[in-house]
Each structure stands twice: as C-alpha cells, then as structure tokens.
Image 1 (cartoon, rainbow, N blue to C red):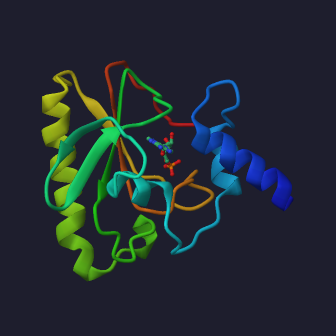
Image 2: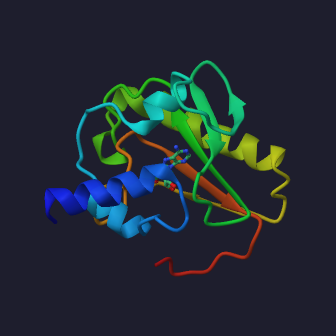
Length: 149
Ligand code: AMP
C-alpha cells in the first residue's frame, strides 16, 4: 500500500466519521507494528475524549468508537510495557493479561451481558490489528456467529 493511501486509511480510521471510516481490514493492513505511541496513549493521558466505563490503577475500559455490537468495549493496560500485541507477551505480563480478562468479566456484568458475550484480541495484520497497544474487545448485546470472519 502506498504511503498516501496508508495515511488516508489511518486518518479516516482515527477520525471516527462513519462515512469516511475505512474498513477494519483496511485500517489493520495500513497499520505499522511498532512501539510508537498510539491513539490509546492519548486516551490514557486524557488528551482526547473517550467514553470510559471502567478504570482502576492498571486498566482502562472505554467504548469502541466504531461499535460492532450493541456493547463494544475496549480494555487496555494503562502501561503498555512492550505489549504492542499478544504475540509480544512474556512471562512478566501474566498478571496484567489475567487482570485484563478478569476485568472484561467485571465490565460484562456491569453492562448487563447475562446472556453471554465475546472476547477478541486481534494480533498482527492477519489478525486485523490496527492499534499496537494490546487491547481486549468485549462484544455483546446480540447473537454472535461462528466462525468469525
Ligand atoms: P484492532 O483492530 O483490534 O486493533 O482494534 C482497534 C479498535 O480501536 C477498533 O475497533 C477501533 O474502532 C478502535 N478505536 C480506534 N480509535 C479509537 C478511539 N479514539 N476511541 C475508541 N475506539 C477507538
């Protein structure tokens, strides 16, 4: 993909306008895996707004700007510590990874998802990852399908 096209896809992804929103796949293919700060750092640092539904000293949970279900929440570690994605996990990350999953269950209950929910962690280009700060997608409020696309 050319750098111009990459910029166009990424900026439309970040702007959040539905009409200009590139597909998740386009955004993922345009994303570059790196340790550079991401849009999530701006949310953590309160430089841009987010609809925060849960926060503790380690984890922040906020509504996805392009929801794929009636409930679509992202859970992220406040300190990335090298976890650009799950494939970068090391033994020392076990505690935060467990905390992210446990918090997803807490938030699911808070959101009233008694009938069930889905947890997704996209990793790398094939996994459709577009933001290189590990995040757990919590999706619910509708019947999910299997296999996923
Ligand atoms: P992924 O494709 O797994 O990397 O997921 C990244 C997610 O971040 C996508 O579902 C985007 O819609 C979401 N996203 C990107 N920017 C924002 C933002 N500013 N606020 C909330 N969600 C965002």
